Length: 125
Length: 125
DNA sequence: TCCTTAATTCGCCATATAGCGAATTATAAC
DNA sequence: GTTATAATTCGCTATATGGCGAATTAAGGA
Image (cartoon, rainbow over all chains, first blue to last red):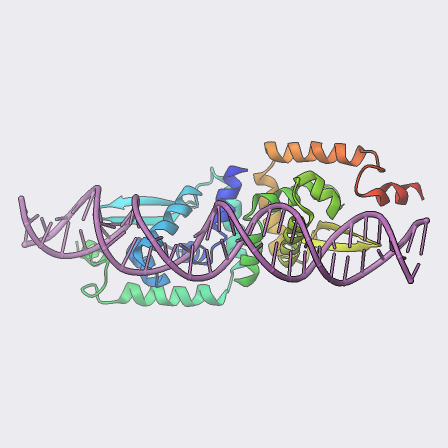
C-alpha cells in the first residue's frame, strides 16, 4: 500500500505530472525543469524529491548538476504500469505539447544566458 | 490533463483506494462501505462523489439505497489502465485483505442490527 | 400524513501540501 | 582560498483536503 500511495500521491500534482512528461524523451537537470515549469528552484527540488521517493525518477549526479530521468527499469513492474497509464492518458495533451515546445526553445537558448551553461560546454568537449 | 488529474487525485487517498479494492468483486451500498472503512457517512459520501467524478465508479440507485460499483467499461481505456495498475500493485496487500475479511463478516451480520436491512429483505423476496 | 432511514450537503476544524525566499551545501572555476 | 553556481534544506504562508456532526433531501413503511 505504501508503495502504491507514494506513486499515486506523486502523480496527483499537475506540475509533477508535467515533469514526468517532459522527461519522457530525455533526461533533464533541475535548472531546465525550473525553466519549463516556471517555478522557484526550491519548489522544483521538492517536487523532484517526491518523484524520486516514489521511484518514478532516478537521479544522476554530474559535477554540480543533477540529471533526472524516468525510472524505466523493467524490474519495477508497478512503476512501468503507472507510466504506461500516464503516457496513454496524456497522449496529445495540450499542456504536454506546450511544455515540450517550451523545452525545445530552452535547449536552443544561448548557453551564456541560460542557467545550465555546462550543457554546452560538455557538448563542446 | 483534467481527466488524468481527476483520476490520480481520486487514487491519492488511501481510504478511496480501499474502497476501490473492496469494490473489486461486487457492488456495495454506502452503508456497507461506511462499516468497512469505519468512517462517518458524510466522509464516505464525499469520497464516493470524488471517485464518481473521476469515473472510477458508477452509481445505481435502488430505492433508498445507492449501490456503487467499479466502472469496468471497456470504452474508458484510461480508467481500465488505471484499474489494472491499481489491482496489480495491491495484489496481496495486507490492508486489502483485512478489508475484505471485514466485508465478509459485515455481509454475514444480523440484518436487524446492520444498517443495510434491505439487503436481506431483497434477498428474502 | 408522519416516521424512519440511506445518503448527501453544509459548516466547521485540523492537518497536509504547494509555493516562495533565504540560508545552506556541494562542486567547479578562478 | 575565494568566488560562482546548481541544488537542496529550512522557515514560513496560503490553500487544499479529509474528517466529523448537524441539517437536509429522498424514498419507503406505518
